[in-house]
Image 1: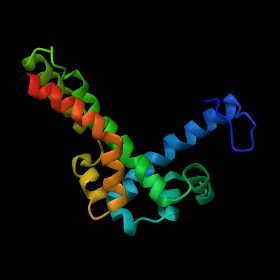
Image 2: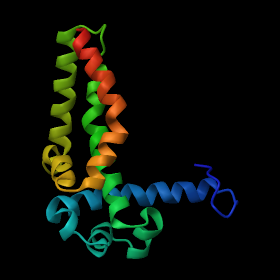
Image 3: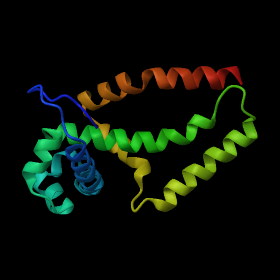
Length: 151
């Protein structure tokens, strides 16, 4: 990571690694807390405690609970949707479907909790969240839909 910060300074590779390491701890902790308490019930302090990091770290990396929530949702949706990448118009349907089922089964076995309901639980009643999903994944869904309709 070599991003230019708002101050115009260049972030060092070491600082980028530290950010990645901390986010790798915070995001799974946030997922567990959001799964347990939902968006409204979860607090940044609970997530910090779960991650065993100071609460200001969460605000430093994510700004606020809504941004953290969206990053957790993005991670889950990425994991959910990645197995569908094998489904392309020229793929053998049987092979593509078998690959999808294997990958999804492996995800389910690796998950500590039932992730399958989390995105729906996360977005239920949250206009900003639903809007985010529609904007972020609309082109992906349209591309996959066209592929499925062609087959």
